[in-house]
Figure 1 (tube, rainbow, N blue to C red):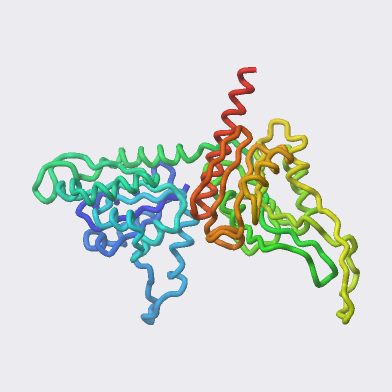
Figure 2: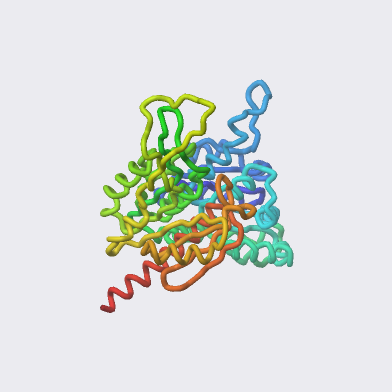
Length: 408
């Protein structure tokens, strides 16, 4: 597994070198990101030699000619996508404040905002700085957001004072990393089938019927599930998205192709999440040649495509089935009808006309309608965050299902 280690500008920065070694002994691959202040205490060469990987020091690295390297300008996104955990040790009061307030003015702070991986932070600073109300507020803000804080130890500090503020022991930090990753592996042993993106239904060799789905929501769910330890099979229509790490991708184009791919793979999966926006209709007849333009009206005869969600749920057995409902009105009413009609366990519904929701956005606003009567309305959040909440609800329903079967 990959860990990104952020090192910030404090006297305890030298201890991060030993931390790299301990993490490697645990089998982790470690890449180091250093702030400008950290480089005043330890050189990047030290971490490069220990980790065997490039040490990232700037958001905009310069080429030999002094020009900005364009690849470095988006490198934080690549690092954010491939890391399994972001660890910051030592974390100064400054970096805690920036994380809490969403300030992104260097590589590490930008990476923190860009990653969906779990985050572990080990603060180290003067005792008065640690006890200051501003720092305490920032720490609590991060905790509420799910950041794992490894509280500093008490003892003699570099400033000559005694009290809380000394970087926690390296073994304690490594233990926190293990614990956080273990907590995120709650889908280990599960195989999940996910559909994503649109389908394209051909009218002739040139034209086709499709919709505005970008596939971002389904891909976010696939990435989140893989990070949480699941074996993920992603059946995707045509989209311009990279396959998430650790995900098996099956590329399809039409609803019929998606139906065949789902039917073939569903028996080996415990959970199926149907996030694809499958075209509801296709041309009844596909012209063998391009239909020529004329001044006469053209009438298209359409026929329904396979209802993939309903077919899968009809004989679902022990499978847990999740569907999506993109609505433009009466969202709750239509979602509950779909939940019952499709024999699903969970429907993720949204109003695609709402601000920050719908197709091709990086955010979404959804409500989760569960088979047990629970309705969970979520505020606007990134699709990666929505994906995590969907998986949390899936696990809740799966635990209820398992408990019911064990009591029979």
